[in-house]
Image 1 (cartoon, rainbow, N blue to C red):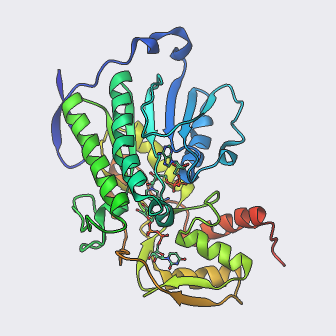
Image 2: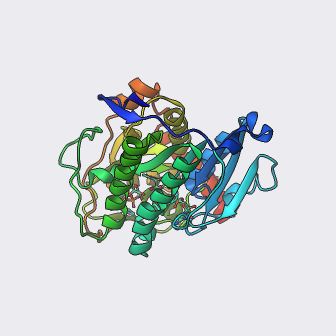
Image 3: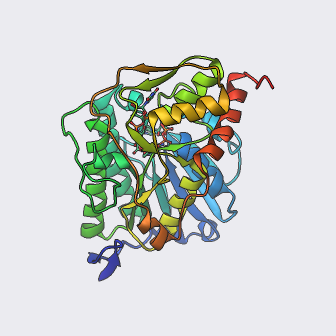
Amino acid sequence: MAKEVSNGDNNVTVKSPPEPSPLRKARFFKANMRILVTGGAGFIGSHLVDKLMENEKNEVIVVDNYFTGSKDNLKQWIGHPRFELIRHDVTETLLVEVDQIYHLACPASPIFYKYNPVKTIKTNVIGTLNMLGLAKRVGARILLTSTSEVYGDPLVHPQDESYWGNVNPIGVRSCYDEGKRVAETLMFDYHRQHGIEIRIARIFNTYGPRMNIDDGRVVSNFIAQAIRDEPLTVQLPGTQTRSFCYVSDMVDGLIRLMEGDNTGPINIGNPGEFTMLELAETVKEMINPDVKIVTVENTPDDPRQRKPVITKANELLGWEPKIKLKEGIPLMEEDFRRRLAIPRNN
Ligand SMILES: NC(=O)c1ccc[n+]([C@@H]2O[C@H](COP(=O)([O-])OP(=O)(O)OC[C@H]3O[C@@H](n4cnc5c(N)ncnc54)[C@H](O)[C@@H]3O)[C@@H](O)[C@H]2O)c1
Ligand SMILES: O=C(O)[C@H]1O[C@H](OP(=O)(O)OP(=O)(O)OC[C@H]2O[C@@H](n3ccc(=O)[nH]c3=O)[C@H](O)[C@@H]2O)[C@H](O)[C@@H](O)[C@@H]1O
């Protein structure tokens, strides 16, 4: 039977979702929402798992191939009766009985996703196909963590969800940004063709504790450099902008999106916009006023400006970010100092 659903802008007629697998009716499952988190050993995924595990009705299964994630991020849950961790690569098929799938698996830092671009695009395309196939088979709702990179080097500023983007299809970043664009297409095709319940979050630069120390992304680089007393490396020209969202705000937005009635795509990010030079100055002032700031070569196709319009998230999910950059940096500094074993001098 067909039904009307909304993506926030207009109503579309889609097939009804498939019935949940009969196994879901088994007594053991009744009390619980069983949730799969792909990429759950990574930075955002592990914070999401922490939040989902707070609800005693949730059972959480993480699958991860540990390319950029680590068991260490989940150590507090290993052995917990409502938690399971599976070493698995999403480019291979998987069958687990679940109600919801948060599909995060994909390297996110440019240095990692460019390391093996063919694998990155396989993860985005085949990995998402596999997870959609799973959602179809067991009748689960699936949320994709897409990215502001689908807007490419945007010619519209700030970016709202109606903007189609300015993406180089053959560049060194394409494995990631075109990969995510195909993943979004697959989500909508499964939704229209098979009635799968989908949710798409377009995440803007997110930071916080547990990022890999040598992850290569700008906030983690600057904080680690400031703590180690190494120069902060601003990639040229330094006037390029990003808008940084603290990870607890991001997790809150993702859960609201999953639980709500809108398919998305919905931007989730903090509209506070900074140039990379401003970010370096802020980190220097807050963590190590003696550290040097140097400029270094940039990489191809680096977006020149990025800032989310979050009206949709605000109106449809009742969401807005709470943590400002100057509040988030000290929380991340504390985590990095502990992991680097470099305490503050004063
Ligand atoms: N952090 C951000 O600023 C940001 C921005 C936009 C979108 N996102 C998206 O959010 C998700 C999580 O990002 P993150 O910052 O936590 O990155 P991350 O690298 O810390 O986490 C990604 C996780 O996916 C796992 N993974 C990678 N390929 C896999 C595969 N083939 N099979 C199974 N597991 C695999 C990694 O081991 C890791 O645990 C990604 O999909 C990313 O594209 C993140
Ligand atoms: O939010 C997003 O959608 C995307 O944002 C990031 O991609 P990017 O913005 O390129 O992230 P960074 O590598 O942190 O770079 C941000 C800016 O900082 C600059 N940078 C980076 C590192 C550094 O040491 N110095 C520096 O100036 C880069 O040139 C770039 O302009 C993430 O890594 C992607 O996973 C994510 O999908």
